[in-house]
Length: 398
Figure 1 (cartoon, rainbow, N blue to C red):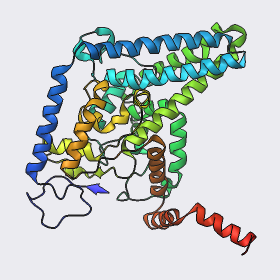
Figure 2: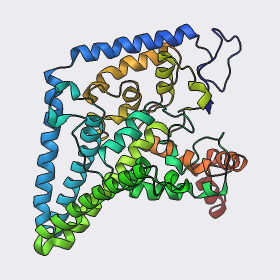
Figure 3: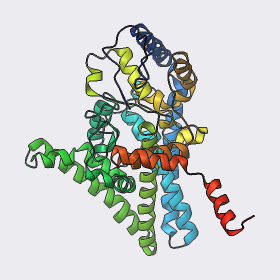
Figure 4: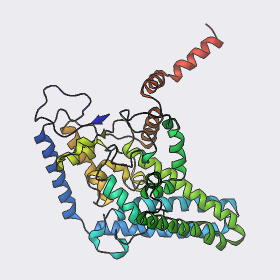
């Protein structure tokens, strides 16, 4: 679905079913913006020691978990040590990327004025250099959220993300591209931050800026590979090969988890995409509305929220990307109440449901629209219980 949220009359007497905002007046939209601005100011005014203590506590726990896991992996020749060390290292890497690195680089903790926990100094455990990631994510994705042709996070330039996009045979492979991207997600993000495909396609190999950024990425890849696949395995002595496989497995687990969480943020059914023309002259209220309609949440426990970097509150994060992540759960009920009062769809659900929804969309959009509709009808009409009953009736006729 493509929603156009600008250049609308004050009142629509005949709602447009393709536009989930058709029932809103311009005054409604600006009031939404004012309410969200007020909510933002409330959180900013109340930031303090409990928030600072939270992020320091998470960083301390993550570092201890990583160090402990790497110590256990010194004995990874023994299967129990390999399993415990790999599990701990996987969790440590997820925490570092999601709740710590991602949120620090958003500037969520800059107000603390701690140079060790600041968006300008943090370098994360990932092959994508932090300054390149901050440009593509903070400046581009969060500005042009779900705008087709402007937000490269939509499909990462290799997938069709809307039925309104023209279909090409290349898209038949997008379920495979997406799976490969999930397994090596940190490298996919590095290539995406570098705009590798676009720069190579447009013949910018010799462009000084592109070459500088490409060398920066290669240096970061070399540093990460040296740490995980050379230094730590060598420190393990007889367990070197086992430690190497443990590090590879931890990186794979982290990549698959991160990819799944991020897919749930903007891909599930119920999330809208937008045309370029819809953001021309966009007001503050309209920007807020686009974030509300272009994002989806994951329901779950406090542990789930921690392990997703609180991107399980993707709607709240996109409304307020620089507020402390530990506050998203606190403001989520207020945001949801705003959705309900203005009759907007607050898209949320458990992780398995949201992942399945995103993958279903990716699969169906890989097909031409007519074929996708036929496949979707077949999927919706499939009832396992009915199939089982039919088979039993054939085998054991009454």
